[in-house]
Image 1 (tube, rainbow, N blue to C red):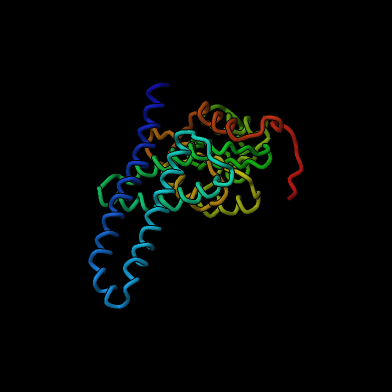
Image 2 (cartoon, rainbow, N blue to C red; image 1 turned 45 degrees about the horizontal axis):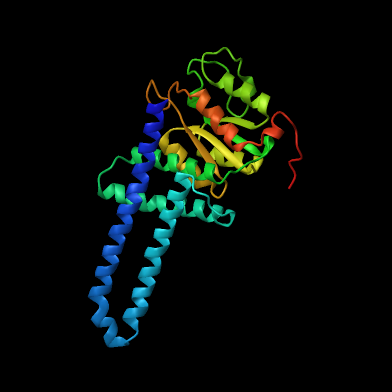
Length: 267
């Protein structure tokens, strides 16, 4: 357990470290641009250098605020409820900044994506989001099903015979017990259609780093918690999920008073 926690912390540190590096780099670049353009701007109007500098400073401060909000979410510091949505928005926007910094530093994209998912999960958890069971949507990839299984479970996971050959049966049982929506999907298009149909208040997804990252971005502003799949046979083939980790993710976001109960789903 301590080893797993250490890996999660390491993942979070990578994303935050790249955020700080990108902020320092942006500050240096902006200062250089301002310095070079100072005389030219002053020749046009004496107040232009100050105005241009103020604009650049605001951009740097906004990124700095975003980094502080993300760090607060990861550390579990109390965030005013007013800033919950803003913090999640800043996190999703800053992902592209971190991706650019990682590209420059030649850091593997999968490591950055895994770090982003870990940080996003921590931020959502710190927002203390709670939803009723029937407003929670769980999405899993079809590679979680045993490749040799003859039963088609995409769109209707209840076709699963729960033989124990893969983790799908345990997830179907958990969905029945707790009352959340559960779907096994074949791709992003079907995932978006399912989200549009169910209109959940929150999503928990099982997938690889790449799919979780793109999924979190696609369904924004719906908060989405990612659980990394286990790939003993390589990507997209007979994958698994840590059921204890998955249950923990579900229990952290679901309103326990609504587990196994039907509630009014109308808005």
